[in-house]
Length: 408
Image (cartoon, rainbow, N blue to C red):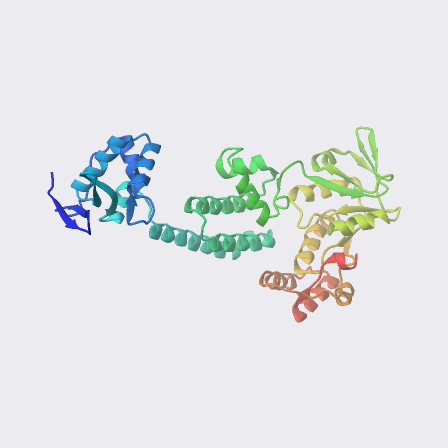
């Protein structure tokens, strides 16, 4: 047993400390003692009060007597100093002070604040490097909007200083899972993505889904809460083995993509019209011409939606007007969807999204860095339609874009 040095600290107060150096090993502890010591040593506080320590010991099943004995052992083995008060004829300890909290935390496997900050910084730096490499890779061309979403997500994680390290790591893992889901062209419900991300269909918490919903267009990425739906309007009759559905009496109708893929006949319109903005789609659906069939184009469409469109074209071939926002993403979306008409040997043209609409609008939304990168890529495409090339050149010159809802 080590000798204890006593130092007076005022009237009826003294401080005790063992006359040895701080040890390099922990005392032999049973399960409850170790659990109590881990609780006592967490955080950055250099000292602890008796009442709080006994309460924490009780929470892990260590009674008062055993907690007192553990505290005495820590004192005698050199881990703490202890301040005591002479009261009622006895010395009663009030507080302890750690002699080397960092060493103790290391032996207990407790990560201290400085280590947590270093781990956090390293994880974020690695994530930014991953995103930089991704922005230069082929996958970036498949969905340029995803790069913006990843950037915003990383900025949000970086700014949330109170986020626990384990939560940060989990969310960074979800970003990588989203990337691999997108790159492999997967489609499915949320449980399918959860299985892809963590091998369990219910592995994502409600807070994680809320975080993903706030930062990503999950439907666009093929992660649906429910079955994906295609919205149509027009004088169309769809048939499934002789069973018919007439759309003409309806303003518009949403049908599951799988059901549309199962249709075996559709009356052909003279013209398909695809509209990106939902409000514009519903407005035009109310005043549609009899020979025009409308499709709502959900932003940057998923591969399932594009497959559905190709199926409709096989059953009801007709040229298309495509109306998207007068911005770089809108041009890219129009070209992506227009390729389905080209593959079917059919004509398509941008409609109500050209230079005239862009010049006439009062909107003056500035281009961001992603817009400019996308514009450079669009202008480098020899196949870019002349009308869209003129729009892109004007956006590039004036540095602004506009949304379709302003005029359609």
